[in-house]
Image 1 (cartoon, rainbow, N blue to C red):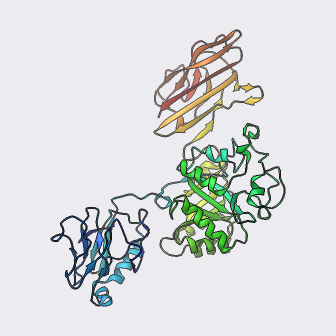
Image 2: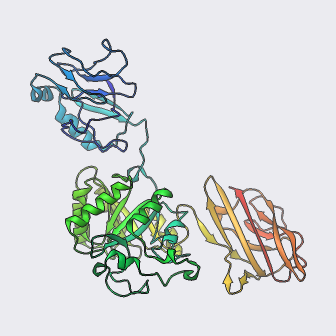
Length: 504
């Protein structure tokens, strides 16, 4: 028979015999004789006395309304409160379980590893679960598919690593990676190195500083450091990082630095993550330390863990397998992208063990090679991520404009909804109409030509000009897949700048 997975479960009274991870619930119990279940249509069901089918408890008593009490239905049965109810029965529960094959039911679901959600359809017989068919898609790390891109220490190309602006300006990546460790007074803070020497105006180990001492420091190195305000230079707390991830719908990828942490430290970490509404499946915890991740498993039995290594060996492979305990414990082996031991055979072994594959820190020139290996996660310093970004390949003598020492890179980027944005600011070059200013990457070439406006600097000011985005179908005078000189460039004396957004 068909039975809908319940949408609620009373966790205070439920003595569930086993658990299914459900994104929209914390826990859900067996459809056994101990429990009643409320469905999305507010009907209430339990197993019949002989265990052969489900019966609707409120069909003939209170109609579709949730009852607060039902008596003398299939024995001495009482339902209390509302939502999903504990059912008290004077029967031999163990015998009922044996009769209807609940052990088979559990084993079958364990093998299927189905991630069920509220509203899913499952078929139940005395032999167990025949099929499970999802009707509502869950959210979270568990349900992600394809390759996911992670911004290493935030957008450290345009802002200092692990700074608030670096986190806030991650727009193209699925996740934001950061590094956390503990101050002397027990606060989790953001810092990659054991000491603050390399990236701030201070010296000393993070673990030797109080939170106030840590927050009195200022980041003093990194990309475009001069553009940051004083507040933006304060090294962040863990809470500030989570707040940004939450606001921007980015998956937190939290690397815990190797070290000795107390139970109080781990408990504070757990409470902080929960404070921001993150449950299992909503974030990733990573580390180079197997011992750290083993401890994390006590707090998050089913959460996805990434074990980092610079080089694969047998010990590392076994550690990944040991972390992959249980059907719903997710693990990714995350390996340095150019490790010579990171072979196809090793990847196959991880796959057979149900272990995901990650790689770091991948430069732009290695993207194609890494992507071809069908890894699950790519951690990078690049501006390119799930949404692509690429500097334009300038042609015919054009160069990026140098504006008082600030090079303005010409680029093309992928936007949501199948849109592409191209922007250029160039000096020099051949200003003959239809001459290519730059070539577009293959993924950014539209089908048809588009005409757009630009600004052209002249000796006595600036004038409006045009440029062309040349698609696959263009006249013979133009170069396919280029942005090209249009009208009114003849008087150009220094720079020309323009941008356009178009659909692929």
